Image (cartoon, rainbow, N blue to C red; front, side, top):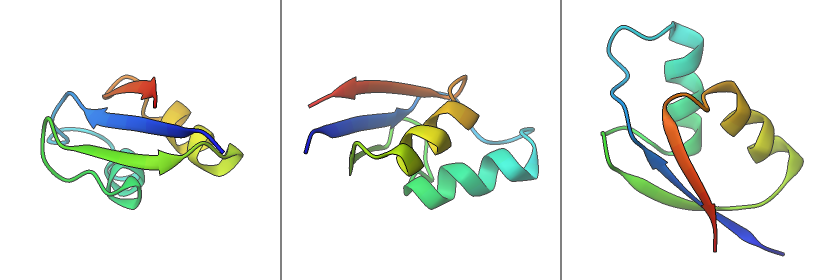
Amino acid sequence: MSKLRITLKRGLAGEKEVHRKVAHALGLRKTNQTVIRSDSPQIRGMVYAVRHLLSVERV
C-alpha cells in the first residue's frame, strides 16, 4: 500500500475548531511538521478537509 507524506504548511491559529481537530488527528501540531500516513480513504478525506493548510505527496 502506498504512503502519503503530509506537511502542515500553514499555522492552525484562526482556523475553525474542526480543522484544528482534523490536523491533530493526522498527527500535525506544528508548522512544517511532516508525517507519513498510509493512503486510505479515511486519510484522504481528512486531507481533503484541510487541504488549504497542507502539502501532500506520495512516497
